[in-house]
Image 1: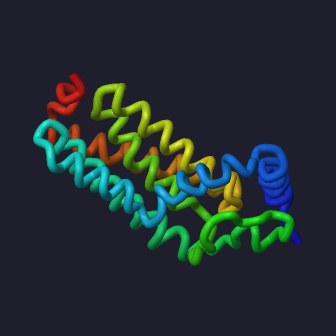
Image 2: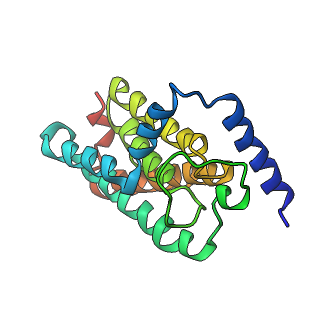
Image 3: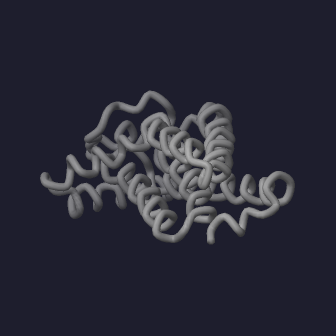
Length: 185
């Protein structure tokens, strides 16, 4: 028996599948969703930021946020909550990406994206920060589009990733790099 929230979420996923999925858009959304696979894209972004002196601090902070987020989401929450994926619960939902092996709640793709993107948004000029924040939103939406997550999984992932990023930013600004605001200029 499904809860009212699960029924509402399944309705949203079915609506997305029936009204927003198009054959020309499927490969694009499948590509976008793979950017969040195991955090590899975001790890690469952190490494690239660390390589350059001007962005090194932001790269370090983003890497710490990403690592802490991974611990919270993948090691603690997913293993304790063990929420079933929507395509398992509702056979009308078709999965159009690789079969996920872990549980659904919260979305690791989304949380990792927001943990990294929020740091970049806060620490880099807007011309760099805004596109990565948009990418984080797109990765989150792609998880709904491909049928891998419930909406609350994605929402929780965004909230957790953002919260982790803001907490890490606060810590680094207060105790490590007291001149962080100057980096953005």
